[in-house]
Amino acid sequence: MTISRMTGFPNIAYEYTGQQAERTKAFFDSIDPEVGSHVAVQNICHLQHEGKNNVTRGEGVVGFQWKPVRYGLEHEYGIGALDEIAAQNDPGIRVIHLTRSPLDHLISNLKHAQSNGAIKPHCAIRDEDCVKEHHQHETAIQLPTGKELMHRLNRGLVHGRHVADILATRGIRHVHVDYDRLYHLNRADEWLRIFKFLGRGPQENLTMEEIRSNFDLAPTTASQHKDMIANFDEVWKTLKGTPLEYLVH
Image (cartoon, helix red, strand yellow):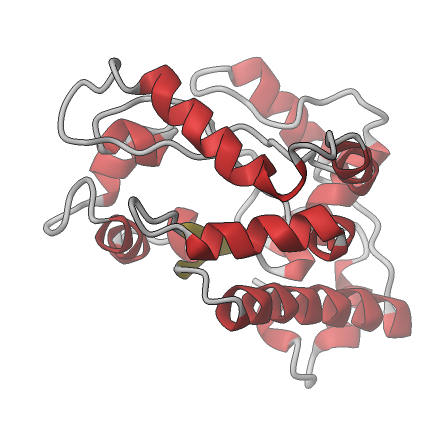
């Protein structure tokens, strides 16, 4: 919603294809064959028509989240939908490919799994109770170590590259942005890359103060891994001196 608000049309880019693998499978398996590969473009058109009278300034943007779960990317309707996205020219459809450190992704998944559903997926700005609950559940996260940890992290990196290759080889207009550079830096360079790619919103002189004033969700993770990982010393011993050492902060 931060991006849409700053382009003049506040709307939520909801998770259309499902957040987890099971929901993604259910989504693609339930697509009406008459809709088939038109599913993504059809949804974008629906969002445009639904919101065209609600733009407060400028031209605005609409969109949805497509979690790149392998099942959806390899489903015939998923492949067809990507090809249709690439073929759209008037207007064109643009994709923001957001990736996150596989170590942080693993920590987030384990935090939610170990909480047994006690915490919400996200916390709204100023929802201090929600943020407090997240912090309480992220101080003793037990990570795998050794070969298992290396395998999981490498698998995450390989999947990110696989998605990037799909976008490139299918000719989809896209920009790759990094989660840490968006949310953990005091410069707005990564956000400017998004706005310039879209051709909407601020194009220069953007600050993180402006960006954060348009946030709807509060940060819920500590900045130091040693404050979250119960077996941090063992994790560090596994990763130190390897090509994945840079993932630790």
